[in-house]
Structure formats: C-alpha cells, structure tokens
Image 1 (tube, rainbow, N blue to C red):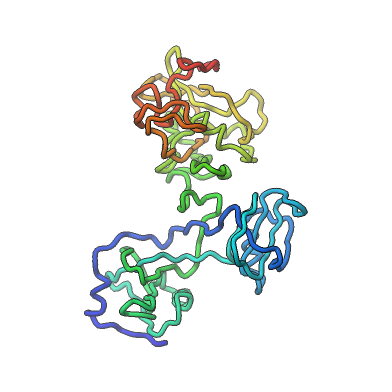
Image 2: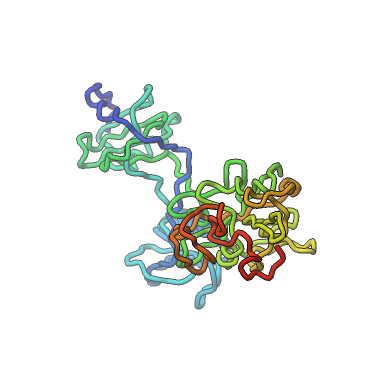
Length: 373
C-alpha cells in the first residue's frame, strides 16, 4: 500500500453534483428483532444484561464471539435480560422476544465523499478492503470520513481520506464510505431504518417499545428549560411525528415499563371541548404518585389548551408538560378507517374539519365519548 497524489483528470469524476451527508450523525442500529441462531453454536451465556447494546459490548469483548442474542423476556430455561454469545451464526431462525446482531455494527454507506476545497488528506493505493481503509482513517487525526473504491471501480482498491464530507454522491455503487469511529443509535431509537429523536429544542426521555405488526412508534419528549407553552407542545416532536391521540397511546404503550414524575405530566393531542375551548389528552392524575406509561388512559381533555379550530385564552399556563409524540401513520388520510390506530379517516390530513390529521375526532363528545371534554 502506498500514498498517491492523483492528477486532476482522475479527480474529475469526484467533482459532480452531490447530496449532503453529515458524518457526525449516528448511524441506525444494525440489531434486529425476532431471529437467533442454532443453539449448538452458543459460546457463552451472560445473565443480568440490561440492554441489547450491553449484550453487544459483551460479545465484542470476547475474541471468538461473532454475534449475540439478547432476551427481552423469559424464554424457556433462560431468564429475561440474558445475553447469549455465538461462535458462528448460519441460518437465521425465528425466536420470540429476542434482539440479535453482530459483534459490532458497521458505519458504511454506498457512495462517495466529494473532493472540495482541499478536503482530501491522503489517497492510498493497494488498499486490501474497506476495513483497512477504515483503519487508515482512524489512524489519521484529521480524518472525518473515508471512501473505498471497490474491485469494479476504475480506481479499484484506492482509499481516500477526507477532512470533511460536505458533499456526497450516492450514485457510485462501487464506492463505500464510512467514518473512523462507528456511532450508532440504540435499537429502540431506530425507527424506519433511521435514528429518531425529539425536536431540536427537546430531549428524548423515553421510547416506547416497537409493537409487532405496526410501523408506528411513540416517544416522550421534554423541553428541559420548560419554556414551551402547552398549545405549542407539538413543536417538541420531530419531523414525521405528531402529538399522539388517545387511541395511538393506548395501542403503542404496551410494555412501556417507564414511570415519570407528576411534574413531567405527558400530554398528547389537543381536542376541542364540546362547550368551547380545547384541552390536551393527558396522563395526569390527582395523586402525586409517578405516572406509569404502560397504563391505558381513557380519552380526556384534562389540560386546558388552544388550537386554531377552537381557540381560547388558555394555552400557556402549563409549561412543565411533556409531549407524547407518535410517528405519522402512513394509512391515515386514505379514506378508510383502519384499526387499531384510527377512529375516523375522511381522506385527508387537514385539521380544519371534523377528523384531525391524527385520524381522531376533533370534538370527542360529538362522537360517543362519555369522557368530559
């Protein structure tokens, strides 16, 4: 292997229009649910491991471990939170209540960083594979990203080390790009193949576990400065998320074994009250006990609020509330009421009519709800 300074005509292919890519953004988790491998390949068993990520760390610390399985619940003779280490994998086998993965996740994407403003630190020829290119980048203090050219590329087995990657071309299918140190978000924070988090001014307090058969997910978001008015609580949710309806909460909170203090009362969708005004669906209760997120809650408009369709003078008195944020339901707005997340669907995602964009009734008491709203 040797360093190489390429002539301008060879660098020209690197200078085509490109997309943006931020190497500092964590990669989604590579862990998967519901599969494991032949028990005859078990290398070791470690108990009382609190998360699949901790189980992966156990695997990476054992030389012969290539993969692991973490049990989220009791299964046969194995207790919940057991970590099973494998010396080899083979065929994927279906198992319930397990999360599995390799000893480490790779932070690679198909495509190439673009040459711009002298961002190429070094070009190394005769690089064996992407792993070696990764190691070269990790050994260079200024390297933030690398691109390895595969066997079918005209510049095969060349490794480019970059000080920045402000432009990215995903059309190079023989190019593999990555970062020197792999950062991945947790399994629970990986939603639809991407790392999900609350909005820019919010912190993520907790993620509800994924529900088998449903793509929708739920998280709890908080403004750590308590400066967000309750009418603006939806701004704590990130793009692609909205304040949860009571129906979404009751479906997606299964096994969400988390409690929050009353002074962080979770609230969701803003409903219009029958006699005027508006209020949030809320998990608040009369006692000072912590609020359990795995307990279903009947629809309510407990916390006074305001929305354009039913404005009030309320809406900025309870800045301590936390936001129940649900990912947008892709079926909402197709004109068909589909269980279990919808109670109405009028074929659009407008909030100006009787059925809100969360596919729940804007005025619950006009549609059979006996709860005070």
